[in-house]
Length: 413
Image: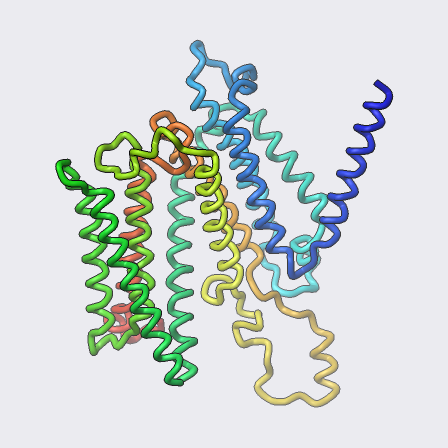
């Protein structure tokens, strides 16, 4: 007994030392990666609790206060929502604390980049505290998460459009034949992939002998959008580039596939239904990993976006350089001034707050399809419509980005 106690104490001490060494190694440059790691950890905790917490939660009186105990799926969804709410509050509190940070001399700049041991402890306490809240609060958060997830998807689309147009402008600025050829090659590859995937969609999700009019409509509408993208881009009045049109076409096709693949496995028009009875843990892990990478990319991209996040005083906004050269005295004084932040800390944390809502909806099948979809991630009719509508919104925003300068010539875009 004494030996076991000593061994446990040694293990705990080693674990604490390991945590301290990892936390102390986080620098200013790696802070965003650390936030992404903390967010990924929250998804792993949600995943684990979804699998194992139901029997324990059935015994908690303020959670299971029903006359008749709900199905196991209800407790699985509730566990995910409670972890998500703790994660949401953690990043929302940080977002509120970071409002108005403009330079690195602000004490809150150190809070954003440091204090990781305290942050991890606060995060753990918040998540644990969520399991003491009444079901009414969790139900309200569940409803709110649907709207927050839609807002996150909209931000994702805006970031994609910003990235694609920036990519095209960067290569065009080189003004060399090699880069023009590269633009053409990448565009052709994207178009070939778009039409190849579209053919695969017809094969998998519109099989002969079944009435699959809804799936056919989704696929045909996506192809119509691809045709509109290309036509508008090549119109002489627009003088656009094929690269953004081809990349957005491929992305809309991917969203169409993702939506159709989210259809319930028992649906006869879902060509993936043959695999529904043998979904491996590896497949589920890949699904969760894809979700993590998508959400993390959106947050990191948001932290680098000049369009959405750079405050007016940041170097990216052009305010960091003087118009006239400084003499030595002024130059020394300029060096003593605080460096402006390169992105909005507050909005960066808001992205993670919305991503917490979005990931909870994915893990619970938008809180409506857990029962019908078993253990699958992001499967069910709500997931289908979210993906399809996101594709339509992407198409609408891209078309607007092309025609807006023509419709509103007096405004700057």
